[in-house]
Amino acid sequence: MIPTNSPPILHKSERESNLMFDPIAHCVRVLIGFTQGLFGNMESGQYRWSPDPEHTEITITGAYPLTLQAINMRPAIVCVHGQSAYLNLSMASFETINMHTGNKVYRDVLACNAVFHVVSRTGAEASRLAWFLASQIKALRVFLQRQGPFTRIGHDITIGGESPPGGLIQDNADGGAVSVQVIVPFFVPHKWEVLEPAYKNDNIKIDMSVEPKNDTIQISESIIITKEP
Image (cartoon, rainbow, N blue to C red; front, side, top):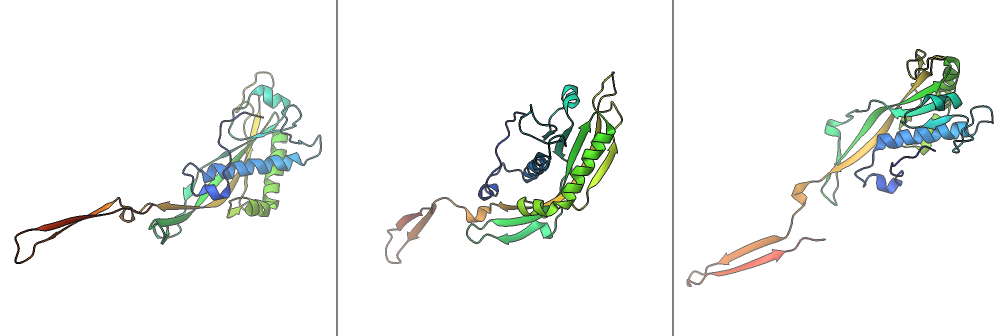
């Protein structure tokens, strides 16, 4: 397996509370896992994927540089995320106010693209693998929507053309490698809260002064109201 220093996928209960959670990167990781499981159930000799690099018949990973030596051994599928944008479905994306904290709650939908780069020594093999991947995402999209964070996926898939031989990885002997892109648009919900400063305060100090009508002595008192934990 290719070593990475990426953090683990967070539990569902931690995704809204962790500021470093990236919903787009999470979706890409789900698609990578789906692709690995798809090819992992293939028969031997039919591009069967295995987590063991010595026995796998195809490389399936995220954004990672490929070498000519790796492509000579087996084809590869590299999944990366493309452009993403907020759809702004409501006025300022505002949803409600959290009555417990006073925070403003916002909700929107992200329109994203996942791009699969199917790389092989020949264009015919790359195109065949690209077609298989695209058709299976289309056919099994209900499982992605059921298990993943997607609200819509697998409807508008695009299979690109073959890249020129040598345009991706140059090889003076036989032309290098050919890449075919599979572009998968998807939509994912996103929710966030913004702290409302008016509801946050430190200890409150109240100064009171009382001056009786028939007395020149001024009575003053201070009261401190501590904030709740």
